Length: 301
Image 1: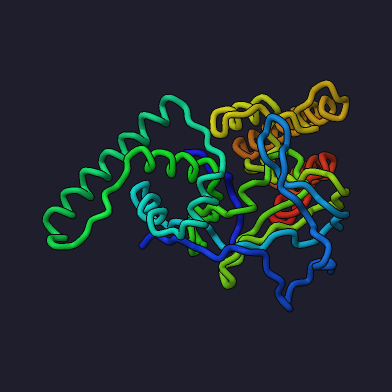
Image 2: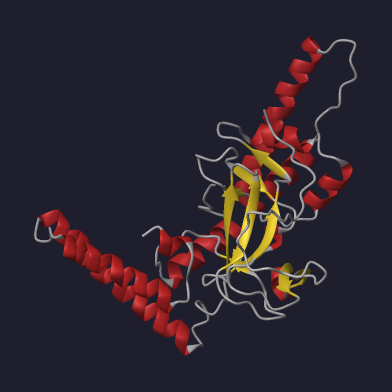
């Protein structure tokens, strides 16, 4: 399963009418609604991406969307397909235009899931729906739906109403290990909000971090992104031709070495003071700040 991880809170569900929203209690910087803030266009080898059409100040809410397709905790691959079957034609078309990444292993798994769903649906329909018109499942479509959902779904957390959800525009935002935006799901409104974590210049691509920020080095990040999403990241933190990327790698490595010593000291009893714990947290904060990372990673330390 490949999910865009750790975005905080805040029967199958086909959620339609996804759109940007403006709420009176929102404290984001004001934006002239007559000026489009973003556009979706080609982003080179990454496919489509979202780009700023105007200068976006730090703290601006860029998107606020309801889910296009979502599942709750305890629901499975069959529920994803069941929900997709009752989407409107427009919403289903928007969903099918999203990208997917499928390995040989994932393909086998998803065909197995689709076949099992078809068998169960057929048996249920034969004995429980006599005299009623039956819309038979399409295993090939089922596999396609699963692949798109797994590649584009955000994990909203166990405390949220929805555990996993796909959004029509937000799912177009590409990854960066040093992103300029961050998402949080607002449970009361049922919307996923994306805010700028720094100033974004006109023409700059909007990005989110698909991975949980744990200060991991480039090799580990690349392994997770290639295995989960099928691409190698070439963001400023991963492009080792840049001195800033090489310097960032050295800092991350040094940080992990220091954290390892701290954890070892805690285990042996050599480190027991609150001052030592505070110092370790401050070092991690300095690492994130040095990489230009802001938002939830800092606020939750």
